[in-house]
Image (cartoon, rainbow, N blue to C red; front, top):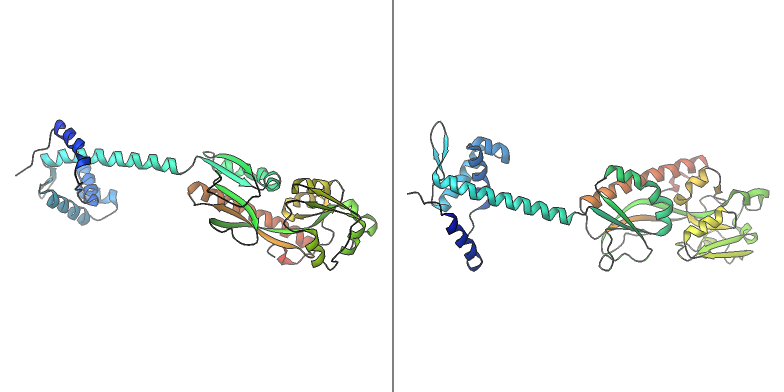
Length: 332
């Protein structure tokens, strides 16, 4: 005996009562199989759409009919025909699955950002990131890029950024922390300071000005100890708040600064800056891309960062090899 499909008024009444009732849902995989079979009026085409076998669709539909206690199809040797109850049930099942698909896509659009906020140290942003970001924009024109700068500890609970970039010796704890580039910190200065052979050994720094900055990851005191001249007193000192100003002062010939090699490689290659003591007492760190969690946009940005970081390392390695440095200079 076929069960008559409820009229629209009855459905409206039922919808109002659902919050008061315990939902008794049919097996959803079976509903999905039936809906595909009903649209195609074919188990074979439904199986192709769902990437399962003809038998799997047939069994799912049979289990749904058993659960409902109602035949949904009339099966003959030559064709498959929806029953009256099947046609009514198909209309409702299709509408429900369509609404679920739309709601799911709407939620995905909200979860995956169309904007990406990147927080990075100021000098890194100005000297490296901004110069390269256009290639990511060409890769992902759908993503709006927003920059903020900081060297503060990474904290996704108190700050509204998607990716935080930091230099560190170890991965940042409490978040996804992925390395993308090695940092080599060495003394840099204007090439004019090498004239006359007055800057050949670390001890010669006593006759020069050392440039400091508040955010320096490798203090001069530590470098001098590692270089074998602990306690050396320079003729003068300059102190700045940010690395950017220290690097600019070195480029102007005002003294020698301890700066990551990758931030000045263009000036070094063009002979505007030089590395007077080679890799002696170099300090190595990694740059990490940090996120509270990964999604398709942050994953795409990290993949881009990794490629750009590798390209930068290759440029430094090529220059270092031409300068006679050890092959391990980039990796530390």
